Image (cartoon, helix red, strand yellow):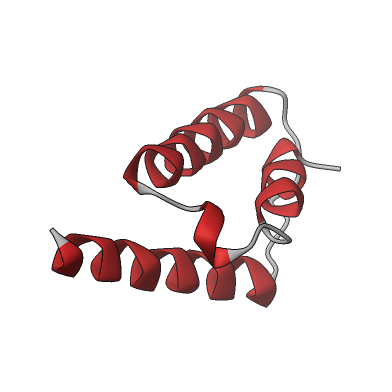
Length: 69
């Protein structure tokens, strides 16, 4: 299993109320690090439409957070 899938699996069940800008940044940093690890360790790309949905959802949450500032 690629490391990226593990990160998505950890963040997917979290409620919207858990997210703030710091945690969104954490998610993005963890994904970037996992992608680097997967590439350097020759893990297969684990394409999954659910991952794209989660990123879109987090992007929307971030937009809402910025609107509240």
